[in-house]
Image (cartoon, rainbow, N blue to C red; front, side):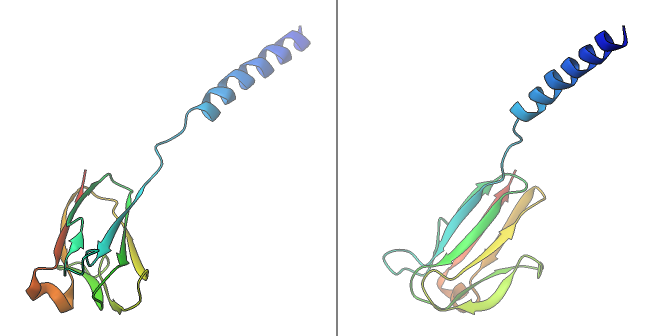
Length: 119
């Protein structure tokens, strides 16, 4: 009797653990935003990105440096240090839904602004 109970319990554990291994949680994604367009315009490309909670935005220096990423009233998300070399980048993970506006400090007057929408 004890052996049958042990086999039944082992089978149950195997079935339940197989279920958990087959269920994959949604993986967080990283979305890239170029700092400076391919044609050299002072803009973020794309200027607005929509992501889900837990996703990351990566800003990569592209053209017409120097650039940075500054969020109004949010120093934790901001990257105030300037990047000069193509490919240099910053990353920020967004864990709360909302709209986050940002700008490039040296080129804000030229209209280099962007927005992250977190659903």
